[in-house]
Length: 386
Image 1 (spheres, rainbow, N blue to C red):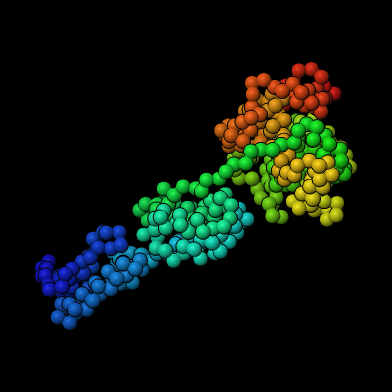
Image 2 (cartoon, helix red, strand yellow; image 1 turned 60 degrees about the horizontal axis):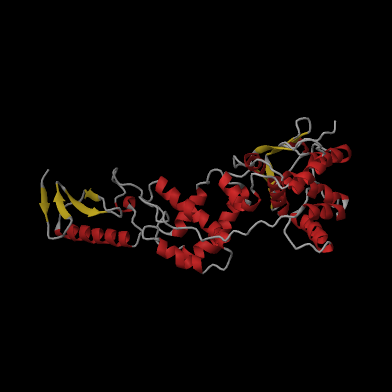
């Protein structure tokens, strides 16, 4: 087919039409033929059209199908151009594996933090040097900053998977360094004192917390059907966060843990008087519903203040369980599974100073006494009582 160059770069006669030759926003060569007579007037119009294409490419608004709607080869390139558009597309795609609560958190961070800060930036020209200065303006804790950036990271991974982008501009973005606070667990004597001063309801809850290592949301979300009294196991399948029951999706947190004697005895006693398969284990007597975090915290803070014990948050019960078990000689592998940690490295980092080949005899004796063990301490500890 005959071709004839013109005085317009990228514009030529092609058969009975006019061909436009250019490179798209990915640098790929594109050639489209318009079925119009190759008159001088049409040549000028084709040249203007090519100029408009280059302008749209420069401003990240190029859409191939809009310019050549009748071409079968033209693709609808109406893909996101800005960070805001990409974030919206990512959320509209229904990200797999996200709970309703997590999706809500993502949307809040996207609308209130990410879009106001960097939403107008081009996704094709974005770099780490664009993100870091904006991130430094956030006046929240480092861990919160890293959490805010998570949906942004996920959106760019989505863009690469779906071939919107060739590379991920955030691949080299490092998290803000989080200064890990050392665990500050209760000592054995403090455990006894706190439990002794609490009301029956508070004592039941916190004795189970201290002797299972469950996180607050896991324990609040514990239902009677999750407890196997015969095998002395608790099946961790869900948690309660911000009043919403969330099914456990993390493989390491979905687990069956050993029910140690002090926790077993409390739950067995509760079962005799308050068992209801249609209700959670720990029910707030004032509401008839599962406990809220604020109500539990109030009881905890009141007990610590009355005993003049240094303030710690209720989550300290989890640290207390881990430190006491390690000090008493518990195998770190058993404890890792019991607590649902992803790896031994995490456990070793948080509880390094309690890990030893030799048990602290005073703590081991205390654990034995509380568990009703008179002989050698084994793991999990089993009471000698029939």
